[in-house]
Image (cartoon, rainbow, N blue to C red; front, side, top):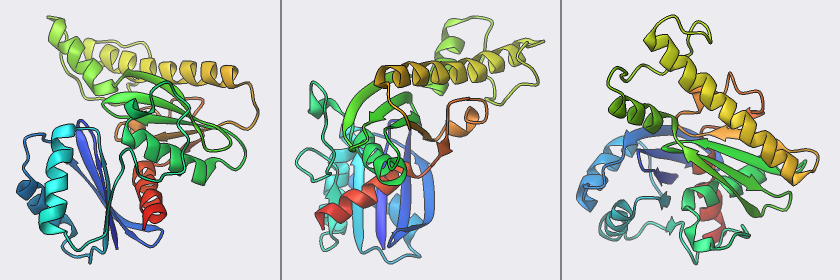
Length: 253
């Protein structure tokens, strides 16, 4: 079975695949201070019921990536592994000014989005994480670029840190757009505000592409907060990055 690991700035997501089917996934916090042995203990406890025959991973945190390399060489030396980084075959042309700047998770999302949703034309991937990423995939599977916006949680935390009378609130859909108290007002501004941001950017990107058959896919840990409110989201695929890592591993082994 294939173990896929997506290390983000806030959370790390793991998934176990049996051929093309994902059997189980886990979400744990990312700690850049973790050593290779600590990562091995954490991951091993999650997947101990599965026989891991391959590993595919990506990381946007350099300190964790360094320890993951050590973990692979120390504890999984005989296991075929793939680290999504420059030099790895992905089949994704990066049509941007500096391809090395593109996060490996965005490449995985591009590959999976084109494979799953690219039959009818371009795909826009909206990844709700530490930042909200808008990745544009052409009908040929090319990465065309996109937009990056501050993420939902870090925006709320920044507001609470800088405003004396505002605080962190539970991020749920309020009873109405017009909040009757501070908590509801913050929830409304956050949930409906970010949904409006997504719809606005997706429409502008679609206008710029000026083609028919565009599909919009949402993914990421915070997607469930706004996908029911967004008017432009067509599909929700929470395991998009893990599926992309599986596809990358298949291309290299």
